[in-house]
View 1: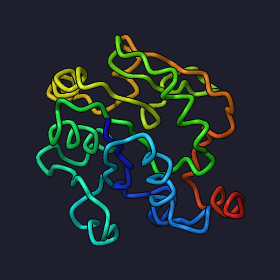
View 2: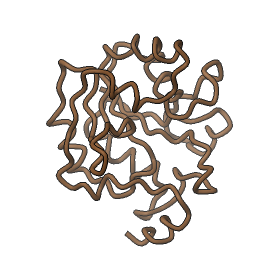
View 3: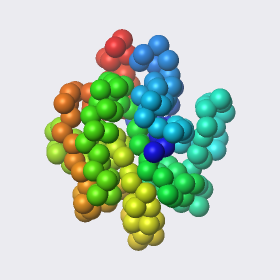
Length: 188
């Protein structure tokens, strides 16, 4: 299994790159790499070509321009295209409260007989597509979904057999993607 830290977003709501915000004395992308590294053969930073210099020293997978500006789906598609026979442990950069125990819980709940194992959003019960394990068997389905004009990973996961995991620590799944939220939580 490889790790994928999704850091290629435009951070329009935050107004600055969420991957570079420091909650734990290091930029969030480094913290995310540290969470995934113990469980993955290799961890990659998913980003746009113009962002690659920000992540010098880390292996990157660049968003594929052919897929367009479709958000996190571009990062996941680019990763599975680069290594289609590999499972991917995917983590977005806007979850600063996640801890190793959360990643351990996700891995312990991994169901190899489904297309993905993802946390369930504590408020909605819907899949959290940026906190999960995508099995290699999901590769063709992802491309079929994209080729039909769809861009929502969450909607895809809602329509497929996936393993939903109820987080032991639901507050750890809180996404921080607005400036006020960052100011509120930046001292964790």
